[in-house]
Image (cartoon, rainbow, N blue to C red):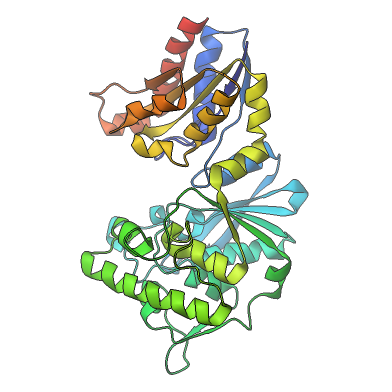
Length: 374
C-alpha cells in the first residue's frame, strides 16, 4: 500500500514537515508494511520556503534585514533549482508574528525588509523569485519593498515620504528611474491564495487593516491613501492595478510587486504543487493524507488540503483530512469528495495544550485511523 502524506502547516503549532512526520509515525505503527511518501505542502503562505526547499533539495539562507518597524531581524529564505531560483516568504521579514500585539499598527509598519530579501536573492544570482504571501503586518501597497529596490516616493516638497501606511496619503510623485536594473531580467512569481483587489470593500485596507491593528478611522485613511496610490501608479507606469484580483494580498504588497517589478500573481497551491509534482504522486498512490491546523468553510478556497482533494478526486483516490480544530462550515469539506475529516484534538482540550502537544495528538489520531484501514 502506497500512502501520500502531504499536510499544510498547523498554524502556531507545527510546520508542514513536522505535521507530516507526526502523521507518518502514526501510520507506520498501524500499517508497518506501507510505503509512505512524505511531501509537506503549502499554498503560498506559511511553509512555502520549507516545502519548496525540501522538495527541491535546495538550501536555506538566513539574512539580516529590517522587520516591519525597521529593527534588525534574521529572515530565512531558500535557494532551489541549483541556486537559480529563490523562495521568499514576505512574513519572514514583514510578518505580523514579528510584532508584539501592542506594536501592530499599519500606519507605521513597512514591507522594506521584504525588498531587502529580494535584493539578497538578486545578489545571489537568482533570476527567478517565488514570493510567498500571507501573515503580513502591513497595509502600504508594497511601498517599503519598492523603496528597498530603488524606487522613490516623494511628497509635494520632493522629499522621500516616511515608511508605512502613512506614506500612501503623502505621495505626490513616484520616481522609478533608480529601480534595481536586475529586476528587468528576473521573473517574479507571487504565490497568492486570495482574490482581494487593492481597493474597495474587499480591498487591502478594509479587509486586512483591522487584522493588523487598524481602527475604523485608520482603515478609512488607509483606503483613501490606497485609492490615491493606485491612481499614481496608473499615471506613472500605465498599469491600472486597483481592481486586479489578488493585488490586495499582504496589505497590497502584491500590487507593488505587480506594478513595479512586473510580477505575475499565481495560485499559490498550483505553483507549489507543480514543483512538488503532486499530481504524479497522487496518481501513483493508494491513499492520500493531508490536513491543516483549522478546517472551516474558508478552507475550500485556495488552501492546500482542498487543492489536494481536488487532484485526488480526478484520479478517484481516497483522501483523509486531519484538522487540529473544526470551525463553521467544516462539513462542506466533504463536497470535495474526501473520505473522512478527522478532528485531532478533543473538543474539551484547552487551546494551549492543543498547540503544545499537537504532534502527539496528530500521531495518535493517525495511528487510530490507520488501524481501521489496515
